[in-house]
Length: 524
Image: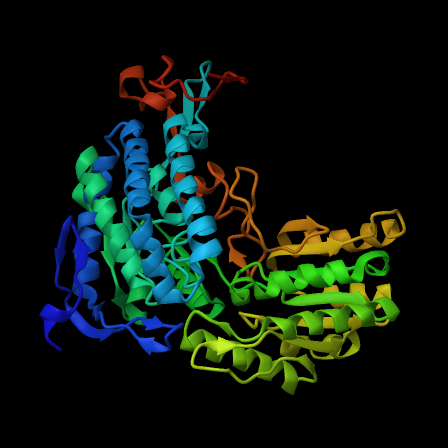
């Protein structure tokens, strides 16, 4: 391979050739062919160089006023907004996601809003939870952990991109430099973002290595990176298999890692709700499973209902709506193959194909698929039937009674989200009281009378959940300023003289006057 034809990497403020151990091309799902650009798979030398530069950048950032971090995030958002057309076009070409309404009207505004929310959070400093006890002269606040590695998912090239998503903005707001590993499903998007980030870094005068970009790295080097003594923390969003591997490597080295992985997202349809509005709920489920071809981490993968007349009508209505959608383009060949394998596994374990199929309709295309199983079979074979089929497919579980439904729901794995549908009258009140504790124990976010897809980026939002959907389960990948704390640690200053203290915990209010807890009261 002629190295001059391979796209560069960004290390310590300079675009340069990678130390190649391989190359790859992105895939255009809509055209069903590889794209022309050749992207590098870096050897450890590139990772090592990025780490060294990031360590120096972290030391520099720790001395900077928070206003500079906020100014960078704001300027970066402005530059990305000016490149909106290029970013959306590249994202569409590399993922097949619709330009409108998905990319231009939904994901792009969400990305820009998250950057600006992070800038406000960095400037306000509420996330630092500064505390002062004057009587004992003991003070504490939160500070950045150090260089942060980010591994992004395939399904959100903008809102979860390695240099544009929630992990990135949270890491920067805490004062950490970022080493981003581009997703092979949308490398052009990552490069465009890196160009604008580098320009914003230069304009604000931050260290050159505040933002760095690698494209491919080998699996063993990914494990080595998250466990390296120089890394402060890692943010990962993606498959459960990859997430578990990185989580194990980082945890073994005592390193912080936040993983958001596969999720089943159970939905419980109570009898009163189905009797009242089965067709309406069927429409909700169809939209949830087929929007963006079901490639959301909050897509419902298990739907529980009691199999009476209303339940039968619901299944047939969903099947009819699924058939009307037709074949849909998926993110890529690999994702399509994994979806088909998941459906095949459900059918092999006793699931009944209601509509759709396991086979693909093209290299990266698939029709919406509905599989049904009895609760008795699910209870007998949970490991075979409670599996994630990421894409436009879902499994409905027909239960003989509410008691059997609750027994089946107890087998659901930890999820990012869960939903329950109850009657608008009070007929489901007892069932709701019985089911809610089960859902609350299994999901980070529980939604009433709506599917779990459609996540609003707002401070109280929780986007995390019990293992294996995420880990650790306490914090959230969405919801500033809360999400910043994933990339920070608390430091106590015991008996320090005023002039040696960080500004945030001095007796005199710091610039910007953030909230601080002083002598048992929050003050500003």
